[in-house]
Image (cartoon, rainbow, N blue to C red; front, side, top):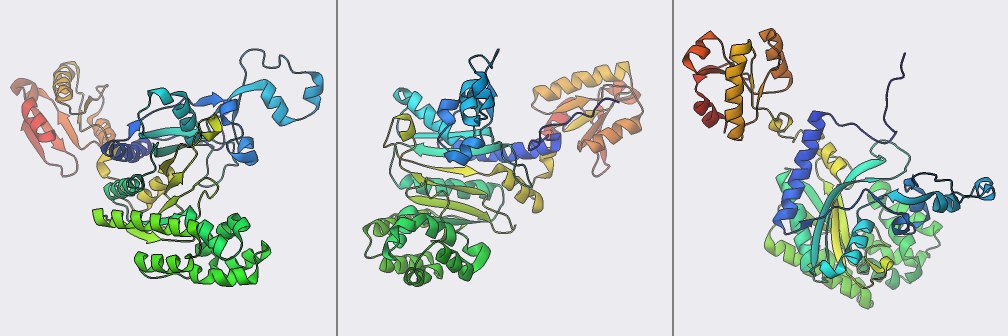
Length: 453
């Protein structure tokens, strides 16, 4: 018996229904991107390894899918190099290209490569798959899509406010209630400075980022294990227990960070973004959260994270301000701000809340039953008229039992069936049956077009 075919671990097939639902998410996000003036670009699935290596840290380099050189890929590799079992050295000899790990590094490469053709500020979006040689597990795949939007070449905080509006628009259109969390990297740096541990900002923020999961006492214990002094931990407590409105939180933070110029700048930026966003009006819940510290080594200003309010799931969107996107490619000083929508988690939220529209899983509005050559010929002419009018229609290809054809229409969730028998051949009209209600009418092609448009 032939071995049953399979796909690589960490990858997925998507059924027509799943694909239709995913396209609903992508189309909703894409429409919002276009509405806000972002321009779509696409970059190759593979990049030169010299572009990718060294951009994600040592662990990230290990997760890059590397592509063997074409032809005799062993050419130029000595027996000593083979027996040395040095993966990094061998990869540099055997592979010149790799699959993209994310959309950010290819975007940085794109900006530098095409900088003379771009008008700054440049607003771009990408919706493309990425690949990571990670250990597959629930919710973590080796191939998945990212939906990114960035503005580069401008330091204006208006860009942050527009991104928050964009997020609010997308999730309002998807009917998902969200909490939009906001923080600023300068505030985190100010906190570390004020409590006397500026060199341990990463340890501090990694710990306090876990408050929601492990609680304050466990956060404090983790800080102790990282060598943070008791005085510093004590000074940190008022910030870990912040409550009240965003303005009340800002006032407390401003008072605590009054001795840090960096911290004060962070508070000013937060206040400007929050006030501007509130002034424009929004449907989402906006919360200042000083424990938010995602991508600390990457972000330099505003930090953004989105959580679904009605489903216990991780972040479904995140992003922030960065100051040196293109520095690794020899073009330093280009500031930008961006966000990334987690399409797979958004899919899970919509599924759990049963928010996918019922109509998106069926593209065909009417199926014409096939009773034979004459009937099929008339149905084919009507199908062509409907398609020319922009209505998706289909003729069942085989003149088989009507029960089988109706079962097909039900299984495919096609709402209407067109029936052409002797009477319909004689009158030139079609019996149209609505499957949900069972009602049927005798209609002309023009009347069907009006009914289904």
